[in-house]
Image 1 (cartoon, rainbow, N blue to C red):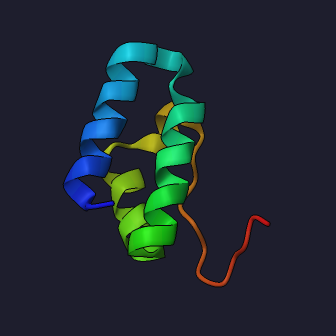
Image 2: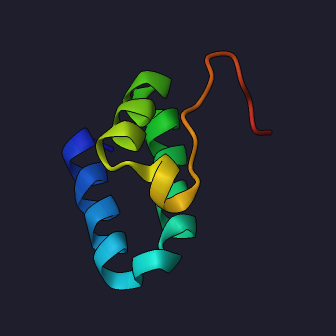
Length: 66
């Protein structure tokens, strides 16, 4: 996945699902983390203010959700 595709998918989820977009956005962030790394995922979280709007916190280096 490229960062532009991730941005588009996040914007689309926000438009389509509004306040309920968190689950869809979290899936995109997970894919970004896997494909592009934690720094890029955190950049998107910050760019779209996802922590405040959807309770999606930045990812700590070395943290694994598995």
